[in-house]
Structures are given as structure tokens and as C-alpha cells.
Amino acid sequence: MTQKNRTWDILEKGNGCQDHPLDFSNETTRLGYYIGLSFLLALLCVFGGIAQNQKQETPEVWPTIAWPEANPGAVGMDSTVLKTAERIYPHLFPSGYSLLVIRNGQLVSESYFNGQTAETNNHIYSVTKTFVATLLGVSVKQGWIKGVDERVTDLLPEYPIHPKLADLTLEDVLTHRSGVQNNKEFADIGLLLKAEPKSIPGTTFEYSNYAPSLLTAILGKQAKQGVSGAASDVSSMAQKYLFDPLGIRISEWRKGPNGVPEGGNGLHMTARDMARLGYLLLHNGRWEDKQLLPENWVQEASKYRVDFDRQKGYGYLNWVRRRPDKVNTAQGEQEVHGYFAYGHRGQYIGVYPELDLLVITTADASDPTRDTYFVPDLLHDFVRRFIFSAIME
Image (cartoon, rainbow, N blue to C red; front, top):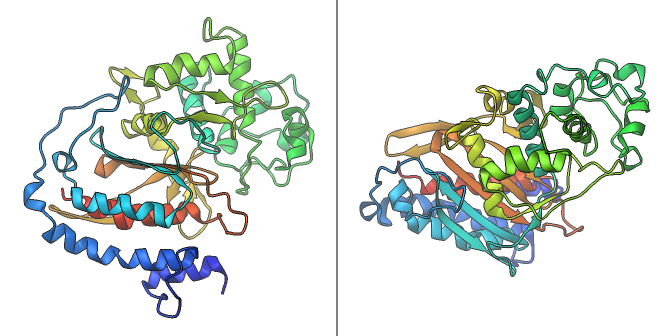
């Protein structure tokens, strides 16, 4: 049995540690031991001080300047359970950098590990993709792009394109069904568009770190044409229409071979700034008194569009849970339809609209001896077992 399958056996059956010593250097043993603690969380919810944590009504808040902080009980969460989650997280993910929990727009739990602080900027890897998709939504709202059904060749006619890519649309790129090659040698979008595609656009899910750079190239071209005023490149366009309104300060956005910021990787920022994107999505593209995205953009972007595996599928450059989670609250069992942005090594923005909840993590799960393919599923399982369990109402 592979490590991945063994871990899933533990997660699904809740056993498997009896025949292993408690060696916390072993990821599987560590998971089995701590997942077993999840059963205690139900008892904590009952006996751990619910009476002292009465939820108070909170006004709508906007963290443009700073994230407001609140006692967990003020937003209907159990502080004892959250503290347990804070202790468990670094054992489950020894390379973890941060864990943030935000409910009703207020920061109720914030922990940093391995020398990190709230001011540390990290590479967010493929979470960059979700930022780029959101910037594309801004361009639709502004009227610079008509919609996701526009063809790439119509927006970038100066690039020769392979005949099989003639009908490639923005939606194909957003859902990783572009069909283009995914080798580093095709990081240059000129080569990418000329190369023989792996599949016909719109037919097959093929995760790509390079196809999203078609989006930044399109947005950058629009900026040069003056649609965004003084913002004459994609970086300044993003700064003016997305980062500045949300209060985000990026420290770096890596550029690709064409000199245009990469669409699939490259952004560096703090965990708190990652959370600001989650908060924009949680509010359906509205920030303070401005609608930055089309009214239906987030609904469309977070829709389950493409199958990936038994746990999740894909929307518009973000991941969507295949099935809703069930969360017990004071009002009874509630279905939660979560979606999330995920970046290599453990960068995570979990958005749970029914609970008005965000969970943010940053990490460096870069150990080559371990299978990091299923880290996002382990992160979600941690959220489900240890953060959702803190929800009281």
C-alpha cells in the first residue's frame, strides 16, 4: 500500500496506528495519531465552555487597512477547540508557516511557525492563478473583455497559432482545458500557441502552469492599449484595480520569458493579504461600496465544472469540493459548499460561504521524499475536522 493510500485509509477509517510506534517524524503516524484527537473535539464542544462563548451580532467589516480581531466566541466559535487546532496544525504540517481563521470578517485565530510573522512575504505559487482569474473578472466588469467565451486568437492575433487551437477560449484556459503543452520549454506563449496541442480545447482537463500566462499576456496587451488609463502594464493594472482596493501589498510578481508577469506562479505576499482575496470572493466580488467583479462572477468561478479526482474538481482557476461538507451547528446540520485556491507546498485559501469563514495557510512542504500531491486534501480534512468543529452557530 502506498503512503498516499495508507493515509487515506487512516483518514477514512479512523484507525491504523495500532501497529506503528508514535514516531512523529513519520507523516502517516503523525496524521493517524492527531486525527484520532478529532473525536475529542466533539466533547470539547459540549463540555469545553460553550456557555461562556455567546455569539454577538457583528457589523460588516472591511479589512482594507487592517484585519479586525475578535474573540472566537463573539463570532460563534469555540475558543478551546480553536486552540486545539492551533496546537495540532504544526504537528500535522511540520513545514507549516501560518494558520489564519477568519469569520464574519474578523480574525479569530492567527498562528505563525518556523520563524514566520504576519509581515513575512512568501511565494504563493499557484494561488497566483486565482488572483489572475479574478483580475480577468475585473476586466470583464470594466468592459475591456466581453466574456470568457472570447477566443484567445481574437485577443492575441499577432501570435501565430496552431490550427487545432483556433477555437481556444478564455474559459478553456480558466478550467485547464486549453489542450496546450505543459512543458517548461513552452513557457514562452509564442511557442505555446504554435505547438501541437495535447488535446482539443474544451475537452480534457490538463493542469497547466503555463496556459494561464495567456491571460496575463492578454491583460498586459490591453493595458498597453490604454484601457486602464495610466496603468500601462498588467502589474500596474492589477495594482490599481485589484491590489490597492483590497489593501494588498505584493513584494514580487515573477515575470516570464515574454517579460509579462506569469499567470500560473510568481506572486509573493503575506498570509493576511491572501485572506483579502478570499474575503472579496466571500462577498461575491464586492469590496466596501464597490462591485469590483461582475455580479455573477464568483458564482460562475466557484462552480464545479471539471472532474479531477474523488475529492475535488475545478472552477475558474480554483478548486471546488466535489461534495458539500456537513457541519453541526446549534441550528442543526448544515451543508457547506467549499472552494479553495491552492499553491504548491501548502499555500491555501479556503472559502466557506455558508459559514462566512476563511481558512488560510502558508507552508513549505517541499520534502522530496514525501508525496505532496494530496496535501490540499489533507489540509481540507484538517479544516473539516478541527476548524469546522469549532463552529457553534
